[in-house]
Amino acid sequence: MLSNYELSLAIFGGIFSLIIPYVILRGLRGPKKPKGSILEDGGSSSEVNRTPVNSISFLIVIIGIVIFCFYFLRLLGHCLGNSWETSELYAQAIQLPKWINYLGIAVFWFSGILKASVKVFNINLTPCFMPMKEGYTLATGGPYKFVRHPKYLSEILTVLSLFMMTGIKELIIGFICSLFIVFQANSEEKALQKIFGKDWDDYALKTGMFIPKLTKR
Picture 1: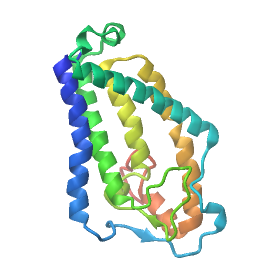
Picture 2: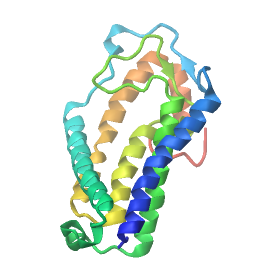
Picture 3: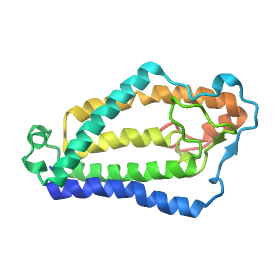
Picture 4: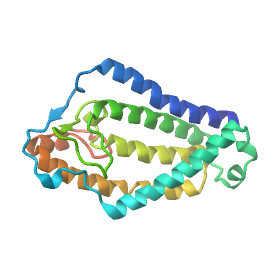
């Protein structure tokens, strides 16, 4: 299991892995649109002017987010108070091998970098309960060059990595809940296909939903 020092380094390193790459990438991009942006041609219908919500799966994902946030904040408090190794969470956690803990740190930091790049390369990043922006732009550059839903992938990896670092059993439930985000992704892809037509089809052929394609058609 990670020591209090190691867990503190992991958590605060994860925070910096989100902030620093964002500042660098945003500065490199400047005021111009991100590379790979495809502008909507104006042919979309009113029925797709709102980001679609798959209600049941969305609710399950929210439960997963709440579980993650609850334990993340508790862990942050233990790190600040230097009490992780003497806490009840530590005593009740699954004793994972140290190499899994370290791999979890790497995944946690990677998910932060992924979140940062998503914020830079997707200028239409919109919560699923908010209307889509007019003149919608499809992101196909940066992380979107490899997978169609890097933001959702980063959320799944974040929950998984926190479990790998700490062994807290309840985070397994949070991870399982986060996997239901695939249904939300499917709903959004149907809307994007209506908006972009062939441009979307061509893009989808070259990328995986959450895992990069080894070969491109």
